[in-house]
Length: 113
Length: 116
Image (cartoon, rainbow over all chains, first blue to last red; front, side, top):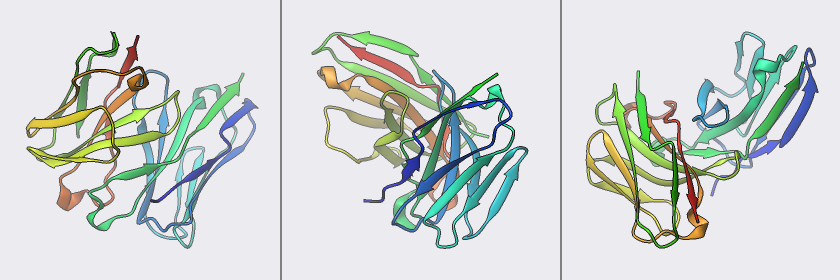
């Protein structure tokens, strides 16, 4: 069974601060996705990374896939209250996994104005 | 793009009663469909997935079952609910098998089930 360990579980910061969320596994993933979820709604995809060492930027968010494709990180620069939410990483093993995703336990981010 | 419709948004059911949650998909033919359960706003646990009509795979033993009577319809059921079935249930879809290698999931807005 593939597991994704996500840290930290909770993050409470002031507006303008930077933060990093980590997603680690002992297994290799063919791709890794990051989702953001708000209360009472389903998760929404932020990004997919598929190549070891890949870095993707989405405005103030920077996503990195580890060289060995076992880990990933999400870095937010100058966090804003609108960034508040649950951040989930999810990996797929590819092949015959039919797109099944293994999710991390999530990071609850609160950005205070 | 794919849109997932899921209802009801909230449901309160007594222990021992039956359950039927429905999920429908717009925008994609032959999607892969998934039922997830999420506990207390944390990670998602995959319950069932389906790659086609009548094809259901269960990921964890439980008191629930799933069915896919039509290409774009996915149903989560139980004959007798347990207290432990309470949770937030999410339906999700992705592209057909051939293109779903790394395709993202599109989620519905979930059903908050409380078993009393």
